Length: 504
Image 1: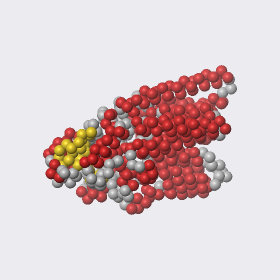
Image 2: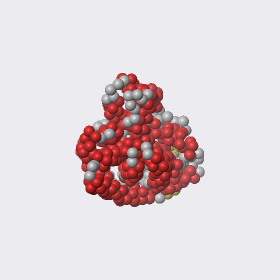
Image 3: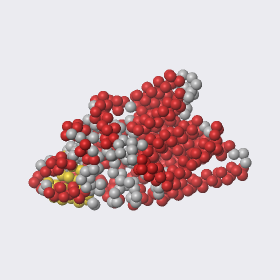
Image 4: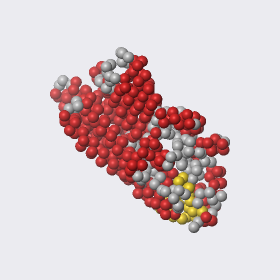
């Protein structure tokens, strides 16, 4: 890395850290953040995913975020700050890596600008979701795997395997790119078996949390990570190809992603074709990872555009490195000027497209998944206000039935059993009462029975207002009225109901 690249690292990191922090504090809350954030708080209270509550994801994220909450305090603002920090670290690594590969500080700056202005990045990475942590760990594995030579120590491969394992332990389907990494290591001409064993040993250490929880309860682990996803849709774990075709179409043509994703994909394809054998190993591996991640992100049913955000940093690295290599290969000053102007125009267009989406994700919520047409109720301030209202009505540690778990994240109350997650209602009817109890799923008749006997003294309804596959918001309110609950507090469009017979 040149001296200029090193001098620019700190200001580049601080600028993007400030940008992602701003986004994290203003980005409208995504519905899934509720159960992720609450899971981290439950882990902080010594609860275990799968064994004590339903958690349909790999287990690492709640443990990592719980460690941050212990240091920084429990609040939406602090937990979002941690996501922004992870995103900024990833951006800083991208800058350093591109500068090292190309020898040009301008290429590193271009990579960071593309990263920060990508709608799939600023809209999904600074949230309380798996994307920032999983991608950071995966990128670290990638960076390490591009460095070793035949004389490199084996432990370096073990570190790469460790980070890859941590990525899988955050977002389990990332394991699908393992053939790319194994092939990349095997293509070395010497010590193939030994180097693979080092990498796999590190990988085994990285997925340690998953192995421990699997051994503790194989059935619960497999249901949360695979079984639930196989039955949540009538199309099964991998199916509904009409939906997948629609996702691909939106990815390349949609109002929020199409232009940018098309530019990155076309730039990579053009660079690989034009350079042929002159492309570097780093750009080729980045493209292969991005390509495999794209395929893997398309497989889950139902599919969502946000899944493809993990591939974006690798697409950016491949596009920038290939573009830099192509510019260096040009012999004619006139051709170089034209190609440089074209790159500058594409970069400006990419950033300009981000401005069109920035307002939607941070303020209006227009066509943003997970907002449900009520943007003012999905701000950090509004959700925190609901939590404060809950605390004013309840006692510390009281069990509250919140139909969106995020309201209890910063509250001093605990979720009523089965209300730790708002996904179980869609599949609970497929299982026996014994299985529902084992997997911590709630069933509509059981929800009704709990309110009929006035189990939870308080219930919170609003915004999303229902378990996925469970009662709609209006049905929840009708049910609560029927069982003697009255409206105790209204915050925005969120209602807090109290059982009259047990009211103070």
